[in-house]
Amino acid sequence: MKLKHLLLVGIFAAGSLVNAQEIKKNAIEVTGVAEMEVEPDEVIFNIGIKGDNKNQLADNEKTMYEILKSNGVKNEDIKFKSMYQNSYIKTIKFTKSYQFKVNLKTNVSKLFEELNQKWVSNLNIAEIKNTKIADFRKTVKINALKAAKEKADYLLESIGKKTGTPLEITEIEDYMSDSVMPVAYRSKVANLQLEAADQTADFTFDNIENIKLKFSIKTRYEIL
Image 1 (tube, helix red, strand yellow):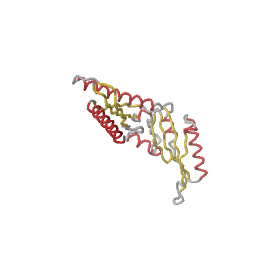
Image 2: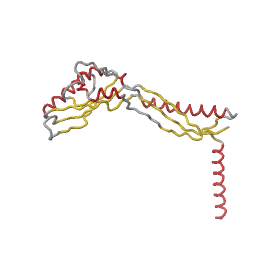
Image 3: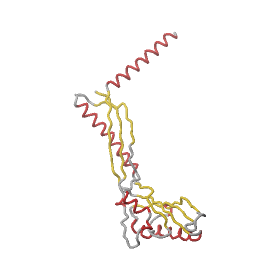
Image 4: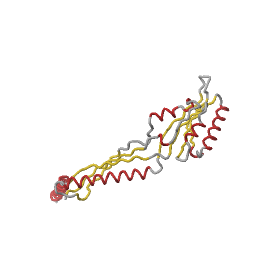
């Protein structure tokens, strides 16, 4: 009885192996690739402020909030990051770091002009975003899968075959960037307070490179 059981297991195993070999033999494996550029509609900035003492820092902080709010930045879009006290030098004893978020409605040039203050120690881009990025990712992945199917179709058609049932679909993420910033723009915003007061800088969303999405989908189709 035990021997019979082992023989049955062996037969099933051999059958599974043959089926797997047949599927592999009668299948085509292709990779589809799709790309898309998405315009950012939100930008998150890092900003550092300084003061010679706590009272001065508090005053500068209050002014910063007033400037941001007057330019349409909401309270919930201003985030405190850190505070630092340097006891070893006579100047810039107290500093605070924040992040704030702007959108397409924000007049960034006007905002930057108002933030061009001696107490602003740094101002730079932390991240760029698009509020519908999840939908765009889905679209790119679907397009990659369609490209894979199209490739399988014309390759098999060239040898008189047809594409059958998909046997395997594997996502290969090749996400290029969601935080792209040209060097020229980065140098402009790295230290805003160093800009000459009489210079007019054009700080707009148009200065920022698009978000680039790229996905690959590897597929195996049955050959008919």
